[in-house]
Every structure is written in structure tokens, then in C-alpha cells.
Length: 235
Image 1: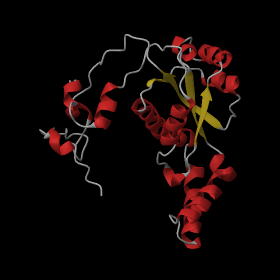
Image 2: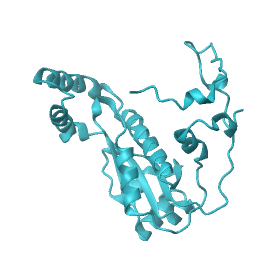
Image 3: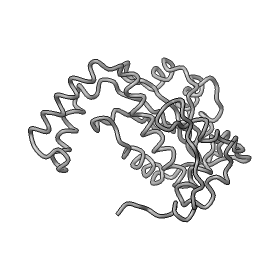
């Protein structure tokens, strides 16, 4: 088992990852709009397949809406008590509506799509791949990347978070007017923890969850000099 000493002294990002807990209870203090905006901005900078960004986030702050959402989340008190709950969804149809056109237009504008030939290739690849794909699975993969970015961004801004997967999807969809083409992926409560915080439960050793090249070859952990982890190799 690994404890928090495994990441001590490894820089600011490691500290954010290490101190994050699934906050069990929240104070009623409101989340400032600027912090919420920053967390959303950073979360939606996440990567996605073909840059299609199928995630859709519903920010729920109204007390009545949170009360109804709590009923859809099997009565979890923090859904109602947290000042903000973000409902992460994945839109399975947006790429066919306008998102692919927008991605290509944005790419041409930024230069990441340099010419019409590249744009046509991207459009052709998307239209060949996505219709044969389980879109519920695909949007879940994409949305959870952005969800994780958002959660860690909020923690880095001094907020506390609680990710939740316990809810009735149909009830959440009905409560918030979510279309049938969108999957409800997860909920994220945001705010400020009402102590005591949840103790760290430990994590499996890398040898239990990481393999080297093949499933039957466990990873062999190295002894890493903490000073080297503070060096950013990117220029």
C-alpha cells in the first residue's frame, strides 16, 4: 500500500492530487463566480478525440433544483448541501449537428488544421469511425477526461470536491431537461468542506495495478530522487 509520503515534496501538482478527498460534507458558503469560471475554463481545456469536446456541464446552484437532484441521487445529502453541483454529460449527437463543423473552422483559424485537404481527411475519418462506435462509451471516455481536469482545477483553486456516480440517470435527465441524446456521466459537488475531512484510504502499490509491456509482467517501481521530479522537462 502507498500512503501520502509517496508524493511528499514532489511539487504543487502532486500536493493537489495528494490532498484531494471525496468531501463528505460541505459548508453553505457560496463559491465565488470567478473561481467557478476558472475551474470550468481549465476543465474544458481537456483533450478529446478529434477535438470534438462532447462534454456538456450543467452548473446547478438553485436550492430547489439541488433538492430535486438529491432525490435523483439516492438522497445523498451533499448534493443538496454543496453550494454548487456540476452535472457532467456527454452529448452523443452533437458531432453530427454542428460540433464537427465548428472544430474544423476553429482548427483552420488557429492553424492546427492547415488546409482543406486536412479538413476533408478529418471529416472523412470522423464519419467513418463514430457511426460504428458505441457512442455512450465514447462520450463517457471523453467526458471523464474533462471531468478529472475540472475536479483537479477546482482543488487547485482552493475548492473542495466530491465526485459522485450514484444517481438515477433518467431522473437526473428529467429534472434538468437533458435530452435523450445526452448521457449523464457523473456529478461533482463543489464548495468548502465542513470538517472533519475524509481520511486518506491508501492506494495500491504500482506493482498491483501497472504492467510492463504485458498483463503478466508487473511494473517494478524505481527509487526516484524527489528533486528530479520538480524539474519540468518541457521548454
